[in-house]
Every structure is written in C-alpha cells, then in structure tokens.
Image 1 (cartoon, rainbow, N blue to C red):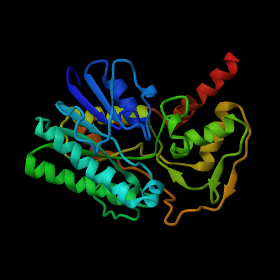
Image 2: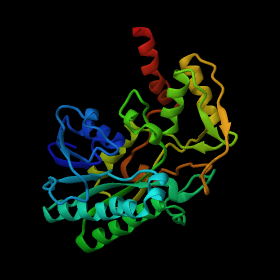
Image 3: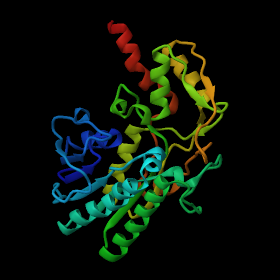
Image 4: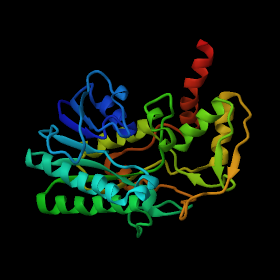
Length: 309
C-alpha cells in the first residue's frame, strides 16, 4: 500500500500502533485514540496522532482507507459496563464508518474476534455457526452484521478480521495494556522478574498465538485486495499454556514453575485454533513468525536489559 490517506482508530493501542507505524513509511497515516487502552508513545514520529474517541464527530475522516481497531477489547470490560461496551464497539463502529463513507472512503478493514467460535481443538472455519456468549462477542458480531449492511447498501469493501490471540510482549507496544495484555506478554514478564505466572486450571488450555507483525501484514493485505466478508487471522497451530511457559523458561534461561489457580470466569474458552485457508486463498497471506521465534522475540528485550546492566 502506497500513497494512501489512512485512518487507524485505536491507532495508539497495541495492534493499531504496530499497523500505523508499518504503514507510515509509504502513506499518510492518522491514528485516532482516546488513550484509554493506548498511548501516543507507541507511535512513530511520522504518524499523526489525534486524541479523540470513535464516538466523537470531529476526527479526520477524509481518507482512502479506514482500519477500525478501536474497541473495548476484553470480556471483562464489557461485563463491568455492558452499555459502554456496546457504545464503543457498536455505535463507535457505525459512527466511524459513517463519517469516512460520507467523505468518499470505500475501503474498511475492522477487527472482529475469534472468541465467537467458543472452545475448539479442531480448526475453526469462518463458515461454522457462531454465537455470542459474552457482551464482547455480541458487540463484534454486531460489527459484522453492520459491515454486511455497508457492503450491500453502500457498496463498500468491508473486511472483518477475526484475530486469534495476538501478542508482541512488553518490549513492544503491548506494555501499556498491563493486565489486559496477551498471556504471552504477561507470563514472560512475570518469569523474567522471578515470579510464578498464574495459569487457570491445569494449564492445558491451548491458543492459536499470532504475532502482531503477521497481523499488521494481514490488515494491509485485506485493504490492498479490497476484501469483503469475514476472515480468520491465525497460524493453524496451537500451544498450551504449559508449553508456553516452557518456551519462555528456555528462552530466558530460567526455571520458574507456574502457579495453578481456579478459573474465575464462567464460559472460559479452553481451546482455539484457526482455519486460515479462506484468507490465504484471497490474499496469499500466511504467518511468518513461528511461536517459538515469537516467544524468543518477546524474551529478547529482557535478555538485552540484563546484558546492558
């Protein structure tokens, strides 16, 4: 993607800032974020930062492409305040798309979620039936339905990406998320500081962990191909939390045992695994960062700190 005017909402957040920084080398990129889950410190100097909410009506909307990543991005945030979760994730989506549409934008890529598949050890294709078990999942499904409306009624390209367990680590742009960061980042930080990571149950739950570099590339390809519909973005490989802790210990040269605790959430998703064939066929995309390499990348920041000190 080159010489495009681009708006990234949630652009100072974890995924949004990685995408904005990647695109800024060849495009005019504006990152809109209200700094609730983001920080402008994540952004490169050539990204224009606008402190604004997706519920506002005065952010820059005259763009060629919208990447809508702004969201209350966890189950717990929605359970604490379902009305606010709906406003940000659903009304904020419609508000943002409406504003760019009226300025002539026809290409939108937005974040959905793999959580709607529930717990599965088999690969989850986009064609399988899904349901909302949480307010967070309901809000992302609502986005997908509104995207259908904009595609059919306004002939816009509306690509929804169902992300699987995106990570980068606290050495990247994930640190500001703290307790809302991916478990890879949280567990690596705990182990690097000599603390036992807390795993729910017996640690056998599995995730399709996807590095943020691959996710940013997927977002750009979805826009380049002007896709419409929903697409999985994952690796088609899953690792248990126990295996993750072993990889982190190996990378750091430590031997910290995890602490196993009772899961505090009802309906906790035990296993996830993507089927990425649809997105691969549409764009040629496939993940480039293996989980072993990704864990090493997460841990390198701690190793570098130790070397420097």
